[in-house]
Amino acid sequence: MKLAGIIGYPITPFNANGEGVDLPKLEMVIDTLIASEVNAIAALGSAGEAAYLSEKEWQDVASHTVKHVQGRVPVVIGIAELTTEQAVKRAKYAHQIGADVIMLSPFSYYKLVEAEIYSHYQSVSDATPLPIMVYNNPATCGIDMSPQFMLKMIANIKNASMIKESTGDIQRMHKIYKLSGAMVPFFNGCNHMALEALNAGASGWCTAAPCLIADKPKQLFDAVQKGDQNKARELFYQQYNFLEFIVKAGLAAAIKSGFDLQGNKVGPPRKPLLPLAMLEQEQLKDMLATLGHI
Image 1 (cartoon, rainbow, N blue to C red):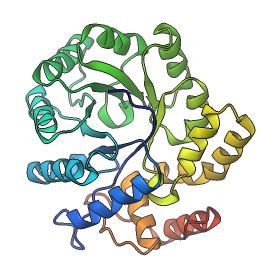
Image 2: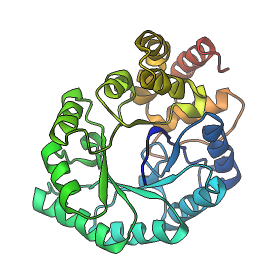
Image 3: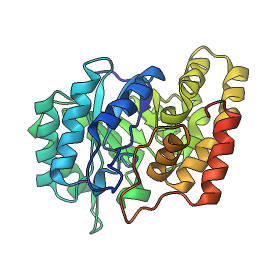
Image 4: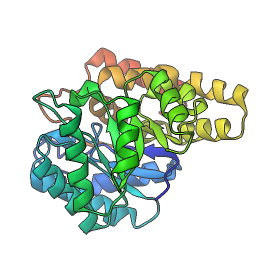
């Protein structure tokens, strides 16, 4: 499975009281992303509040996403678990329901050494034939994997085949590109670094932004691919304030608030997460209006 382009992150809509997943609204979110010309859907990441879902809710979102996408684009299922046993269980489920890729990040309470992380990935690889995206997101998961270590896993673990880098350090991407001889696909996970990352050779950009601003991220990706740097810069700086805002405000809360502002009620984020404050809602409304999406 070769992924490239814009990997769209759906949020997980909840009922008005926040107590259950609203699957019809999830279909709306998925259709919005596909209409925005994303090249793949990555469910159950941080934007999807995966850490706050029950086992049944997680399975319902995963299976319903695959079912509703219906092969229109590849489906990536995010897995970030404290135990290898649970990660293996979810990887097997992703394979069972027909997902195309798993995005695996080690999640830590204790500080894991490289041998433990390697064993975690090896165990998941042994449990399913699905391609594995090695996801480095220390801000969320508490583990920072070096480019050298991630490439070692790509070289030696059968199904580990691509990297998502979310530290915000562009030098990591340069190192992945250089050390792999440009042979290992890597993806940008930091919205505010999209232009730099794509110019550094990233195969794509993982983002929830198309939920609210349609194909503007895809336009940026296409401009870089065509070598039109003037157009790429123009598109990037049009989006920059919005991209920075949704990360700082919290992806789930910001995207859900944006949907509400656009007339699509998708429920609140799940506590302890809180909806955006009134001032932040006004800021987001102004940004969406400036971008022509409200």
